[in-house]
Length: 81
Image (cartoon, rainbow, N blue to C red; front, side, top):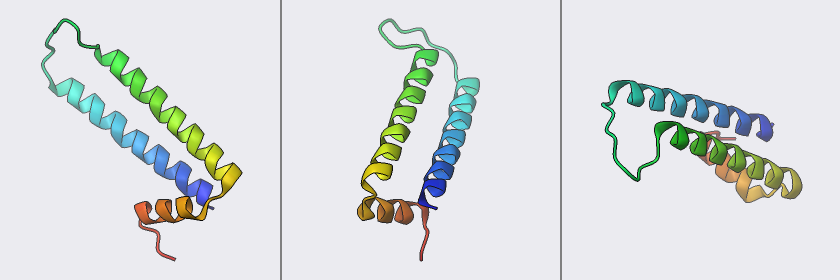
């Protein structure tokens, strides 16, 4: 059950981040500064980081099944048992 909760939280967070980045890109004025990363590089770096964090969290939860991690996830999602 906790894996479903974590996956749902990840999907919802990813959804809201993508919408926020899309709307901020749409409403912003592009400024070309030398030495700064492009929007596409930033988005892909953020996506790769999110996938790695999800992967490592899943591996940790599957292998160690730590009660503290489960309690932290339940607290963050507002699940009260």
